[in-house]
Image (cartoon, rainbow, N blue to C red; front, side):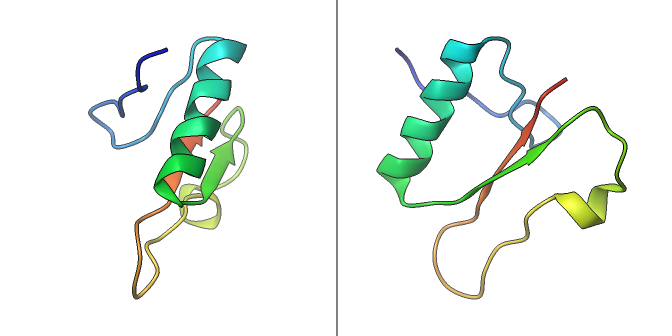
Length: 64
């Protein structure tokens, strides 16, 4: 399966369980964390991951 790309808002929006699985594999391969948002009930700054001082930026995923 091809890599899933971020949308223009900088967040990954998987459309299926298979795409979620592909994102997990991408994250493992890149050595990054994943931060998942659900249906938007929380405020964005409380959910989205911010880059650490060193190392790769985490993947932000929205399950919409």
